Length: 89
Image (tube, rainbow, N blue to C red):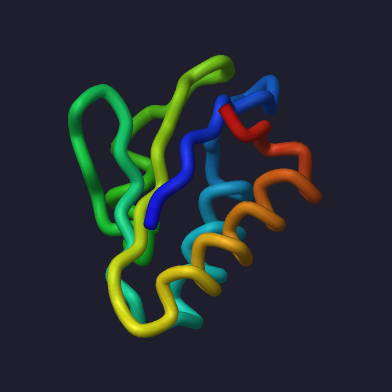
């Protein structure tokens, strides 16, 4: 399962929003990937997410695979939208 988002925060995915997403992803057993510019990283790794250098206006895809994949994507979508990090694309 996957969803695509456009990042709308003026700072992009810097430390605070990245931490929110990594913390949420870590609570699930599914493998979760964040894809940006044809590169995918483990969304449970703060260093991997920060290394992407995701700027405002960027389009990213979050995908999950595993027993709780749907629940994982729903929770991450909720965090992205409710914290003003991005919009579904």
